[in-house]
Structures are given as structure tokens and as C-alpha cells.
Length: 500
Image (cartoon, rainbow, N blue to C red; front, side, top):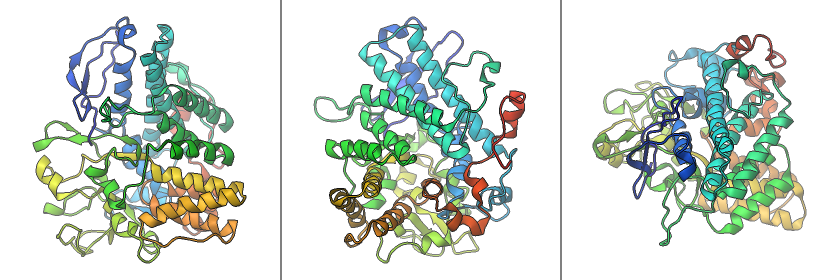
């Protein structure tokens, strides 16, 4: 929330750009600047790149695929921590498709997810095309190029986890027919992700601090953002040594630390904190002006009436998640809001069935003080956290444990216990590699509940069938079918995933 993109970047065929740029807290809040393609050579590609940051905001449905219900459906509903939520009748088909694994090739959620991800890829490719056409190699432009490559990598990371083999489009689309490309092996997509993130590691700055140590651009990508995503990409392929090496560089940098209170992560004061590595930014000012918010929090808010009309109620915690926490785990009350109980601010949530679910996502609950200052009841000011330091610690622990050896496993245990200590849990002692593996899995479940990690973790651990099989999951459900609209558009060039 502390940094935001006030207007989406508009790029016409003449590359005329109007960008709102930043004050002391927000790096995009200045009178509009006009620039032609030739002008970009003077100051780099920042106008276009700032537009990429803004494109992650879900406003007016423009980017539902990154912070809205299509993202919840494909990244969250399919796990055992979250469900469709809302009322039973609201979007009942989504529950059938995602919670019950009755995938549909033509469901609009997947079509929107696919289209908006490739739209983002094309915008990143347009930045890279511009830089290449103008042969830009100054330091500022190299940073902008690295930012565009990070966003392309992040977008392909989503696509390869959801669909498996997808078309590799690493060039600007000038004609719609240029997008009619066949799928490529996942190894090619991972190679592109690796290359893009290596460019980010090489060219992005370690921070954006000024001479007094304050960030000039809070929320902007750094070298460690690229390292963290690169580590995760390696973790998904069981490249334990590669993932561990990157995580250790982040840990040893001293740039990040865990916040003492887990719940602070999901409040305004925790945004862009020492634990934050990358967040999709949102902002709503005093009395609602300016309003550069998005729907991430709104669509998950309590579905009630009057003062309890806090949102749509989607992406609600499951009973199994509520029961999964160890006794005394502070993350439970920071994650799950109970119908009929105190909200933590002195108000009682209406009971079930006055509101249609027993549990709600506390991580997006609107703080009363921010409601008052913005004049808004529903939380559209909340940043969407994508990468944070706790993930780095648990990735490092997992990779070290899988590599084995006394030193690695001692380090793994230290990192796990850092997470547990913050949660109010006692330290673990090492017994076996298998037990530590189970402990790490549980810590990931508790730490990242409702954040879109659980389903993909289960799949990469080969645990999805045993955990989700009773819900209808089979080996065919590892990857979602490609949208039928994309196959039809390709004229047969794009081949459907197996089983569908």
C-alpha cells in the first residue's frame, strides 16, 4: 500500500506515454510526462516498466489473472487449505470445477487467466523489443530490462505450474497470428525463466536506498527479488543445491528479517517491510483519494450485510486447515477469522448462517483505522504479497535437508526453528531426514495458508494424490486443461493437455 501505480500505463502505436510518478512514499506520483520512442533513449525504459508494475493491479477486471478470483481458483481453491467460499449458490460452478476437480476446458476463469498472463508477457516483450531496437545498454536501461524479464519469468512461472507445456513467446506480438505457437517442453519454459532471472540477479540493484538509508522506491524489484524467485523455480525441479545457494545469498545479505509478529505481515504497517521481497502494490489515500486499490482483499472479505458487507467471501479457509495448526500456533488466529467470534478489534463477526461460512481469511481483514481514514468499508488498499523472507528460509531448509549431511541438516533445523519461534512454537530437534521433511511440509502449510502455495507444494512433493484423492484429484489433475478458446484460436497448432 505504501507504494502504488496510480494509473495504468497507456502505450499507443506511437508509444506516447503518460506516467504518474512517485513522492516520498510512492514511486509513481508525478505530473504526467510525455515521451516518444526516441525520447526513451534519454532516460531508459522506466515509463514502460512502471506500467508493468501497474498492470498487476486488478482494476475493472483488467488483470483478474493475478490478484482476483481466477487467480484464487487456479492457485488456491485446489489445495486443502482453501475453498471457493462465498455463499453456496454464488459461483457454484467454481466449486465443482476447482474444489471437486471437475475441470472444464471452457470455463471463463481459465480463459481469463491464460489471456491475461500472455498479455502481461507481451507487454514485457514489448519493453525488451524497445530496448533491443534502440540498442539501450546504459545502467538505467539494464535495470529496466531486468525488471521486464523478472515479470516475464514470474508470469511463465505461473503458467508452467498451472498448465505444464505452454507456448514459448519471447518476442513482441505485432500480428495476432504471430501468437499461434505450439506448446514447448516444460524444460524450455524453465530455461527461459532461469535466463530471465539470471539477468535480474546480474542487473537489478541490491536495494533502492538513498544516502540516508530510506528507500527511494519502496516496492520496486531488487536483485534479491530475482534470487528468491530463481530459488523457487529451482526448488520446483528438485535442484536442491541451486536453490540452497541462492537462498543462502539472500540470508547472508542481511537485507531481510522476520517480523516479530506474524499478523503484522497482513496489515498496513507490515507492507514493504524487512520481510517483504516482492509485493503487488495497492494504495487508497485519505478519504479514498487517490484510489489505486485493487480487488485482492475485497473479493476475499466477509460476505455479510451492512457494516459486515466486507466483500465477496471467496477463498475461505477449510475446516481441515483450521484443525491443522499445532496447539499455540499464533498463525492460526492471524489466518482464520471465525463467524460468531471477536474479530480482534472488539467487534463480533455475525454468526453462521447469518453469514454463509464458518471461517474467513483473516489475512485480508480490513483494519478499522484504515477503514476510517479511507472512508471505505471494503479492503481494496491491501498489497498482495508474492515473495517474502519466510519463504526463503523454508526453501533453504527444504533444500538443505534434501541434500543431507550433518551441516546442512543443522542449518535446515535452525531455519525451521526461526519460523516456529515467531509462531510461538517450541524448537524442534533433529531425528531423521524424513521427520524433518514432514516438519518442513507442515511449516509451509501453516505459514502460507490462503496464499496460493499449498496445491503446488502438494503436487511437487508427489503428495497431491494421497491428500486430495478423496476430493476427485487424479494424476490428470496435476495440470489444468488448456483453454478451449486458445486452442480454437490457434487453428489446431496448440494441442490440448493429455487426459482432456
